[in-house]
Length: 404
Image (cartoon, rainbow, N blue to C red; front, side, top):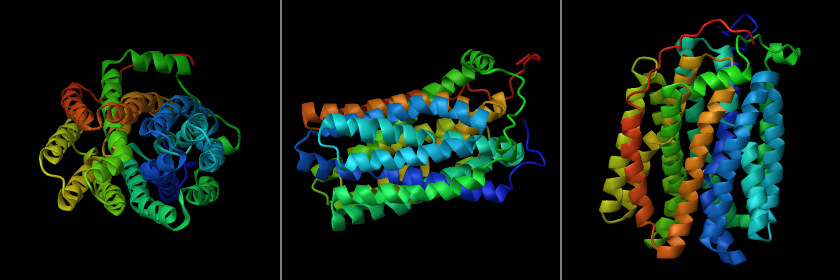
């Protein structure tokens, strides 16, 4: 499948796709701000909150596989509509969760499923079908950068809402605000899908899965994405609490998260652009290597406001920069017919890592009173991901004609 005369205009795909990802990811990146006020008010442990966010990541990954299949078959428009409504319900329920189990249901299961239908895999499928291959990695970088802009915009906004209105009312406001995705999704309503005409494919779903999971480079990409999930979600959720333990103010934590989002606008855009001219496996290895070095320096030096700002800016350059490059490799190897589904499976590996990162962060802290061990794990995983991305081959896979 390649872009045709029935394709959506590039500007429309980029504006609407970027805005949707910006809102959905922006809200998601601020969840760490709720850990302190929510656990203190409700009398819960950090592990209780961390478990809900861990389940959110697993739910996102599992549902993402099926939302990708549905988006490939019926178009992204319907999937995004369902995801936005589910997101609103999950946030509203999170505000009124009276037990850790209810928090897991609303903040974990429902919000995670909603994110599966409103973020990268679904939107990248639209990009793959509507934007030429020579601009595809760049376009994915633009949309990924929008997710970072959402973090830069929404994290301070969420912090202000919590401070001015309290954490419960802040969640209710967000549950209303997320509905802005509904009109934006209309811009990703592809003509062929709208007419009820599914694209003609040379492979069935099972054939595509058998091919991908039997291909070494796909397996390596999944392993690398596991590391990405572990690192960014551990830092994103636990950094505010880690800094508070160091005697830092909540405002410093929200500023740090916003800086990560700000600098990641540049990082993801640069990664997507570089993916058009450099070997993508080397870009990925360089990202993971740089993460390990930055984390090592950060935890080895005294924690000060200046060191936090430098760490946030440096990590921001690398935060979501793996996303456009990884998805561009998948599209380059396997084509775009099943791109949302295959991206969903790779992202599932990312979310398994996310689950372990956020859950282990809470569990190890509750048992030891320190995050030191988890920081060391993130460094070791950086070395692992640096090495396993080097053998990835991004050339299109050679396949014989098959009947769907």
